[in-house]
Length: 72
Picture 1 (spheres, one colour):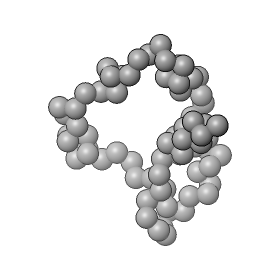
Picture 2 (cartoon, rainbow, N blue to C red):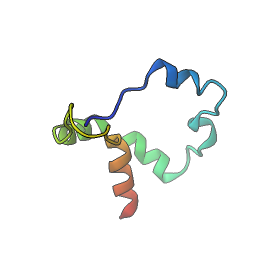
Picture 3 (cartoon, helix red, strand yellow):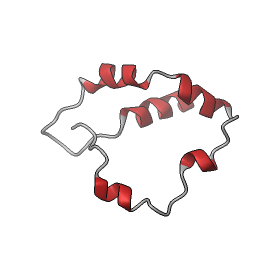
Picture 4 (cartoon, rainbow, N blue to C red):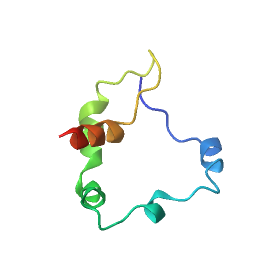
């Protein structure tokens, strides 16, 4: 099943949380490479393996690709 889109209710719960870009170091190599990756290409390529109607909602493709990159 495809990952659910962010809902307005989820965003309201994050009103008082720190934003990741305020916490992370923009000079870190992984931070910099994340900006250079064409995430839409991965969404398009792997999105066809997700189904709309069966199973629980899937994990975000960016998360899965990022974790796979870190594994190597």
